[in-house]
Length: 136
Image (cartoon, rainbow, N blue to C red; front, side, top):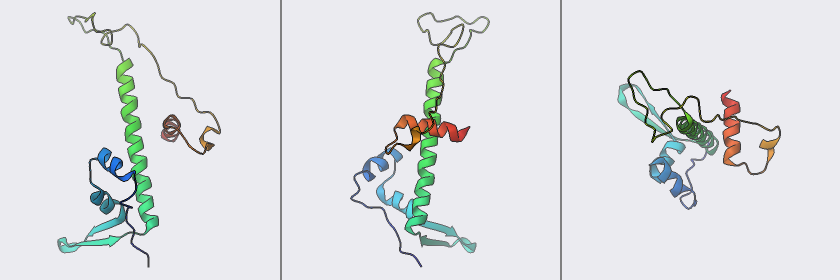
């Protein structure tokens, strides 16, 4: 009914992606290109996916990875500009201006310009803007 698919081992992007994900190419290929179904009695059935279904899985992986990266970046940025007041009896550390402030040091705003997403090549900044819009 369909041809089995597999990742191209000669793709120059495969090794860096695997390194960033902390897995090897065979494991990524197995995760994206096969389906494992556990049947009754503990038996596992392995089925190769079509290229179209594997691409859908890849799209889901990318969306999840971009979402996690975006959340991580927002958290790191917010942590770097966050403020808190010293509690009663707690001393402020004057040598560390990021710990205690009377007000936030800065704020972040996200601006989306209509039509910006129609460029042939989108930047990381556009990815963040698009993800914000989808999340809202």
